[in-house]
Length: 468
Image (tube, rainbow, N blue to C red; front, side, top):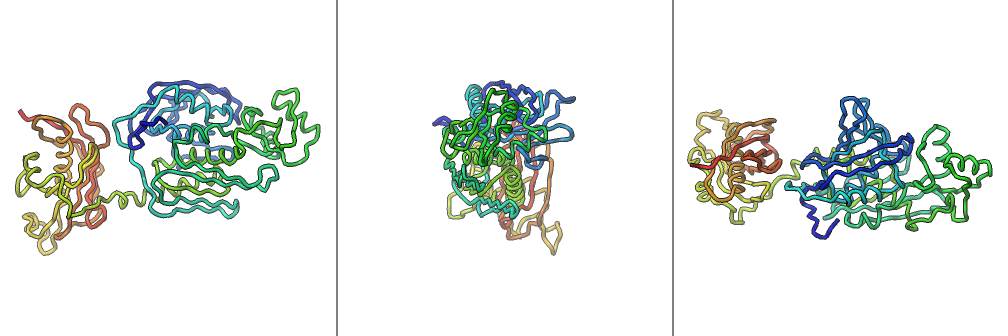
């Protein structure tokens, strides 16, 4: 990442870029093309070699296999070994990209994320207009796997960081530890670290006709037991070498490690890639003991479910009545054409280029309570939507520059009323742009909060028109 990189904005690549290589397990030669994508698109894979060119989203709920890498699948369409590419995209700050493939597996390249980082740098990283919405972890979230002795936790933190510990009871590897304190260090500290395998695992994979694309140049082979000449001959044949050998360091062909703890760093790389499948960028400190793909994906699902369950509570705006408003009622009346009894916003307490928060104090004196459930007063849901619309109108008009404008709402979708609003409630009216305003059209998501809970929400589209 460059020094001026803005982590609070979404990013894509500036230009399409291509790379080709062999799939580790299938041995198939795969051509891969990375394309720029619009804000909010996320990371999606497209199998251009299959009928209909199906698209598979990078989503932990679509993972179907984690035996020797992470595989995504929709219907009959699969994409395997996605974790190294996803780690490179996260490490380079790329939020939106379409990955086209003419085969079932991401090329293994040298077994690390470095080749993908290099092509992303070649493509260029482009900042987009849309804000990047981070989910800040506010409580410890755990995942345990007693059978595999895996422990994973994400704790509250102002940044995204990862610490990985591995212990395979191996005299060669020993106990290793790796840490990524800031994602900006991914390229220099983590990206080049290659995948590794133990010799006994390698032999089992060969027996099952896997790792057809394997090579001693794209994986570190750990040898922690005596090996016969016959086994060496078999490995030389598999890897198309005249000779392979094990030196005193315990690695096949005495491969030079890029870091003393390269295996632990690669496990950390896998965590970064697999947790990209959460679908939300998170801020939190991750500690992982004995991680692996199945545990990473299970942990991603736990975090994703936590976010889905709690994100509305997390998004509740903070209202400090002691602070002066951004817009007073007098300023609101200068912006909107509405007047009593149809002006439903009392003040604006927060305003950015992508969101706005208004306040509506609901009192028993509201004129609509006289006829809406007399004796059991409830604020009509349609008026809550109108209050959101007026708040969103101020946001849109504020972004239009000089001139006088009005907003006319064209469409309301996905409207849900979740709890009743009664006299005495203070409503916080939050409207967020789903994307940049184009040709005067504003696509927004609105939420009404009452007593710290979501009362109403809806997606709205409005048109901003200049007054004549």
